[in-house]
Length: 145
Ligand code: AMP
Image 1 (tube, rainbow, N blue to C red):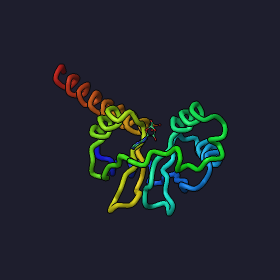
Image 2 (image 1 turned 60 degrees about the horizontal axis):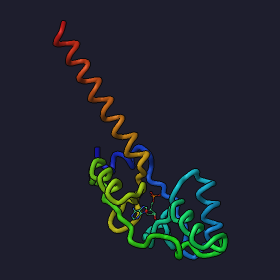
Image 3 (image 1 turned 90 degrees about the vertical axis):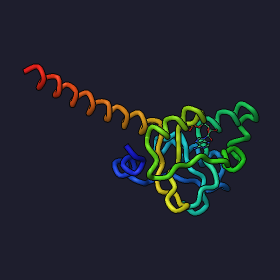
Image 4 (image 1 turned 180 degrees about the vertical axis):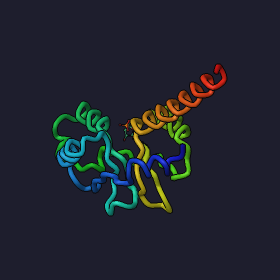
């Protein structure tokens, strides 16, 4: 399955925050949307970073609660690994495993066009495996009658 299929199913909405908002605001956004990461962008289209709950935990452990008043740009990851819509879901699973992150934004013509999480990858692999299992079961049943 390709990333474009995943995006077609789940939609292309991506929660973004501006780099100059504070971490307290970021926490509210993550809680409101029940998500673990947000793409950092000034205009909602061009990516300048990604920030996840892990960045908040790390910064809190390093510097304490003063982090809540710092801007998102101080804790985000600026070197974002992205993918294209025609990438395969298996490629993304490898990228996430090797990079040890759970979110990959999708870019189309250089602009934000969706985001895939580890949850989306697992869901799509389970669906594929269920389809394979059902067709193998039908094949075995047909062969034994
Ligand atoms: P996550 O597992 O997505 O919560 O992120 C773990 C760490 O990787 C955090 O420091 C994130 O800022 C960073 N991160 C998350 N997604 C990406 C990505 N696509 N490219 C680069 N770094 C990322």
